Length: 274
Image (cartoon, rainbow, N blue to C red; front, side, top):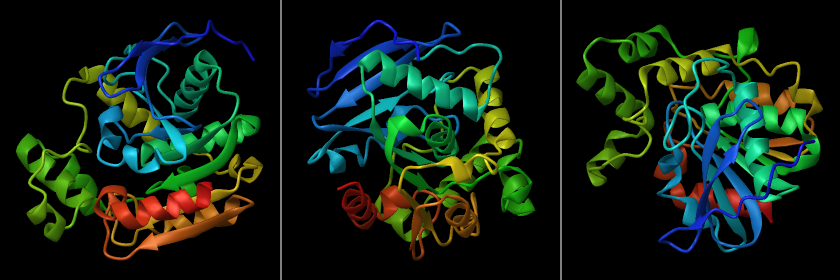
């Protein structure tokens, strides 16, 4: 393991600190640390920056400090022109932990962040104490893919229609009626086009099936039972492949269960981590 120079970052307005970690392939990754206590790494979904977690991260600060990062291609991080894969994103997480001198962390990844988290735990078992996988899948031929109607809606040419479709895949109509937005889970609007494509390649290319049995961390798998973006049929696949895994479904929730079912989901995660 190569330990990079220790990076203490700069203080942020809300009492945490922000900084950059340099990867072995020369990409500067922005990270954001808040709170005190054991480190909980929070990994966002495809083509999203760390703002994905803004609505809920404070729910973990009683016992943890939260560590988010802008995955390569998003936020303030660099956007290289190649090498896009969930395994590469996992090594980026390790680079940030190394820069901060964090030997062992709890890791909570949602959506594509859950795919990345699978690799972090499988490839670096000594670095992950407990693992939480939300609204995610093992990828590859064994995974249950979203249906053709969802794929077509997200591949449409009208950006307003695509955004509406994505919003409705994330949240129920009842929740949207009570929460007029802005929503934090609909993508980083400032991503360069090549990076957006890179994230798509990484997510579509994910296949951790053969690696899942090597995960040693106790694992919690969470999912909304009406998620059409990543079908909940992936939950039993993950729990069967990961040796010490349990699961929890949130009735009626869609992809962004962690926001819509914030109180319940936060409590389940906190109980599991303590």
